[in-house]
Length: 197
Image (tube, rainbow, N blue to C red):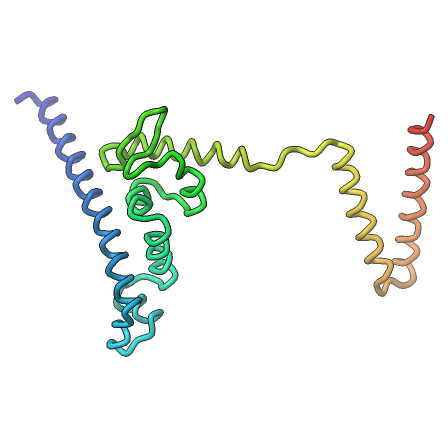
């Protein structure tokens, strides 16, 4: 066999192994979450003499918060969420937002239903990252108009000055604050007159 064919064969083997491990890990995570839920819900962990928190840390080897999160996600979103989580790190909030694109064990990408499986990992990762970016942009607050922005800033400044004036300012500090207020009032009056003209 030619050396380049051997390299391609070797690469194919490694890709196949990676996919097999990913499938195994996906089912393992789901199985583990189901097992941990059973242990927690039945209270059988108490036979160890440990609290649930201690049991998670000492026997499972994970924090209670992480174990609870996995169980909760399995209960709320099902196995599909866990399968997707094995392919791309995704929060429950993002999963909820993109869930309309998920049907059973497939996710819609460019109008095509793609099985949530290790062999589609690259394509799924890219699509979910794009969906996450689109969501972030959609959720960004629209820019305020300049007048509203100025109004917000002035209200903030007036509130800060008011708090200072009610505080324990004495002597030079009190005089300096009063000078700032008087100067600001004069400038604002000048602007008001220009706008009225």
